[in-house]
Amino acid sequence: MRRRFYDRLITHKDAAVLGLSLLLWSLGLGLYNFIWPAYVRQLGASAVDYGLLVSIGMLVASFSALPGGVWADVYDRKAVLIVGWAIALPAPLIYAFAPSWQWLIAGLFFYMLSTCANPALQAYIVHSTPPERLGATFNLVFAAFSLGLVVSPPVGGWVAERYGLRLVFYLAFLLYLLSTLALFWLSEQRAPEGAQLGERAGDRLASAFDPRRWFRGFSQAHLDRRVVVVSAAFAAALAIQNLGLPFSTPLLQDLSGLDLAAVGRLGSVASLSAFLLSPVIGRLADRVGHGASLVLSLFVFAGSIAVVAAFPTTMPLVLVSFALRGAGDGARGLMTAGIGRLIGKAALGQAYGVYNLLVGLFSIVTPYAGGWLYEIGPTWPFWVTAALTVLVAVPLAPLMTPAKEAG
Image 1: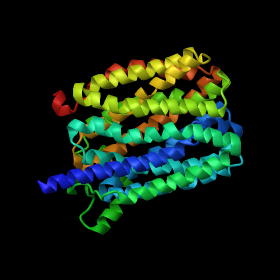
Image 2 (image 1 turned 90 degrees about the vertical axis):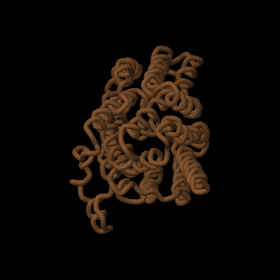
Image 3 (image 1 turned 60 degrees about the horizontal axis):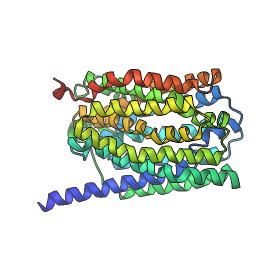
């Protein structure tokens, strides 16, 4: 009895540490995330250039996913998280001194390379969470990330207007550093023996840095074809969001005439929406079904995108649109948790490596396509995003059911 209580206590402590680290990270990211597109354009990039920049970032994230998944199953996941977080630390400093938009590629490389830690983060949560609470736990932990994005965008916009963007990036670096240091309080967690790629330390080291091992997730028996198929379907749905969302700031500037401070405030509204709606969607999924909850959240997200496309100059409706946008974050959490519900704990890291690889590969194309659509008309990426989201929502629902339940 005492041991079981201690295990629960450790789980709660680790959830709190992860929440604190994600909160600090999002406070740093939120300082510039919503004014980032304006900064890129300020450095001379067109809408197509901006879309290309986002696509390059997704390309780097894609190729970091598979090794990250293997490392999550080979090494202590706490160590993988710390290293992954640390890789991104140079990014805001590079942004601060970039003389043109092309220089941002170097900073984006470090930032997106750090996503190699995503499989370890996702596997860490799934490994220590009962399946019946997975939807709520995923969205609750990541709600801490959304909370940081509520607070910091107005601060970032105000600092940028008053003192310049360089100070914004310095502050972001400091918060990223604190977020990384917070992870040292996390408990260690290793994958079960079935996921280890060798019995001896030397074997594990060789396996972890062997590119052939990075692709074992596609062929290994305990990562069945259903995981790959479902991952591809979810990745396509998430990539659709990247047709329009990256161009929210240009739309608000070009059609609504908003300054950076106002854009930051609307970004806070969207993040507050994610903070409030994601846990509700997760809890609803655990109670009434993940498939129905996913369809509902995607429909709400599509509606929010259609509203801002139809009424970009009507501020009350723009506010409503951003207040509902968090349903998209809730849907993302359900899909990410859905991968964990499909597979046992023995290969979680590799399963999420495959999932993140496919999310990245699909998302390489859509921001660049969104840039071309934006050149045709600023609302076009949003209309296409809304329409495609509605089209894919219902077919995704059956994929939320684990095979043993579906059969």
